[in-house]
Image (cartoon, one colour):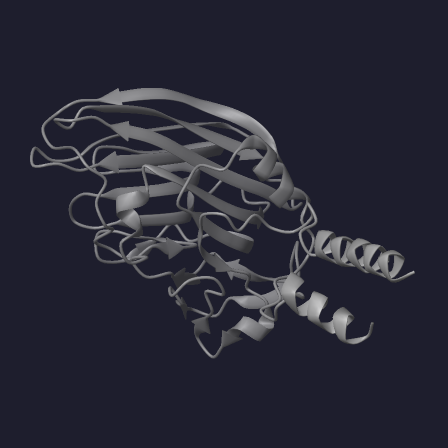
Length: 287
């Protein structure tokens, strides 16, 4: 009888534990920072990083609105953005990392920035829509999603960018993920690949290689701006639309993990969801 009770208890514990690690939950392995933009995590102009130490600061007056998961921020395209800080030392890990967000927009004509960090020198990185803007060229390309990335070194920046047309400007929510997987070899030469995902479907950007002396991924020297680009010295390229569930990882997510996050509908809850040891202790006292 007692053995049967223990078996039933073990079965219950495993069942409860499984519920708390269900595939619908967000991947946390390698998670560095996470801004859910739910009202409870926004105090005055401060946006809480619920996983890391990089609380953001709001500029302008973006509104808290119903989001894809919980709530989101709505940007008016005329002065709204969020300063997510320089993310500490995360720039050094950017060669093997992932960026993720949900976005909703109908603006397919005006150049705008989803996210960007760009100081007066290396490193820089960003994702723009409807065109691109760098020191050498500015071009409007309606309906394009464009990303760029640099690797620093004593000889200056080496980097690349690329984009393609997408169907994400339809006023519906779309899940955007960029994964980076670079290896820097002894001496500074390196190679790697980037993969983007839209609504869980991969869009390989391609492989690339770079050369030079002592190439390295470096800490960001300028803050990461969500919803605008601030270079040189003033904000521009304001985002028009909504942004939700922004996350950085210190490793490239797998295709299955991207799908897991895409399918997740659970708003972030800072309270523990019932650890196995706590559940076991509770049940044990009832035997």
